[in-house]
Length: 404
Image (cartoon, rainbow, N blue to C red; front, side):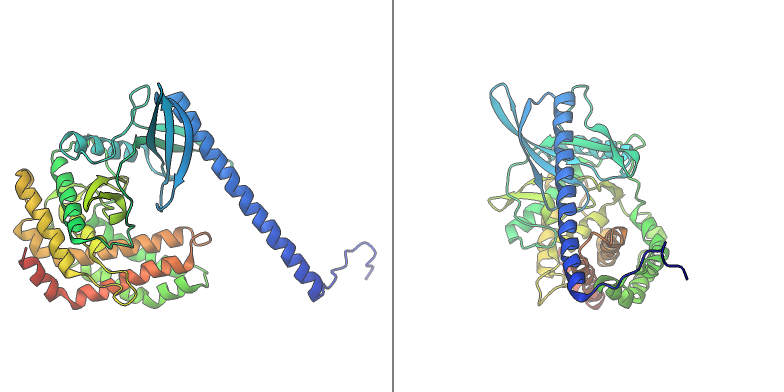
C-alpha cells in the first residue's frame, strides 16, 4: 500500500486527549455564552422595535426577563413618557402558536375584564388598535412568525410556583374566588369562531396512547426515559380507565364554559393573603367547567413535599371548593357546580392528572437534548404518585365532596 498520499490516523495519547477535551469544554462554554448573548440581543432589539414602531407608551428605559414560565418568554419593562415612568409586561409567544389562538386569548381576557374580572392583566393596544404585534424571525434558514403582546403589569407578589403550592387557607379561598369570578365573567363569551388548537379534554385523552408508544421507542438512555418506560404500562392502563369513567351521555350534560386551563398558584399574584392578580391565559379554551375546577384542585392542593409527594390534601380541596361555590352563589350569575358535576368530580381529578402527565411527557420528549432530565423526572414522578393516590382514596374524595 502506497501511504505517501494518505493521512496517517495517529494514535492520541492520554495526556493529549485530556488537553483536547479541556479545550473542547472551553469551546463549548464559549459557544453557549455566544448563543445566550445573541439570543438576549435579539429579543431586546425586538422589544425596542415593537415599542418604538407599534406602541404609544414612550421609550424603554430598562428591560428584564421574567423567569418561571415553560412555554412563552416573559419580560418586564420600564417605559418613560411625558415625565412618567410606567411598568409593562411583554410576552413573546412560543414558536408555532396560531394567530387565531392569540386572538382567542386576547378576546377572552377583554371579555373577562369587561364583566367583572378586574384583577386580570389588561392588554395594551397598539397604535392601530390591535392587541398584538407579528414579527418575522429567522429559524433554521426559514422565516417564521413570532407574536408579541404588551400587558398591564400587575401589582402584588409572586409568592408561589406551580410546584410550590404552599398557600395559607385565606389564599386558597381567595384563589378559588378568582376562578369563580373568571368563570362567571366569561359565561356569555362569544369566540366568533376562534378557538384553541388543542381538542376538548374528553376528545384529547384518547389520542395519547399512540404518541406515548412512539416516545418509548426513542433512542434515549437517561433517568427520565428509563423511568417513563418502567411506568408506561401503568400510564396506558390509566388512560384506558379514565376514558370509561364518565359515560358519553353524562359528559354531554356537563356545563361548558371558557376556562383558564393552566390555573395554578404561580399564575396568580398575592397581597395581604388575597389573590390580587391573574395572568397567563395562553392555554385558555372553551371546555368542561369541571375540568378547570379539578385542574385547580390538582395544582393547588397536591403536595410536593418529599415525605408526602403526590398526596391530595383533602382539607385544602374542601376550602377551595367551598369558596368557589360560595362565590358563585354570591355573584348570582353562573350556577355553582351542579349535582352531576359533583358526582363526577373525583373521576375528573383522575382525568386531569392524565392531562398533566401528558404535559410532562410531551414537554420532555419535545426537546430531550435541552431539558433537564432530573427536573422532568420529578414532574412525572409526582403525577404518577398522584395517579395512585387518587385511585386508592376515591372513597375519601367522594366523602369530601359531599361536605361542600
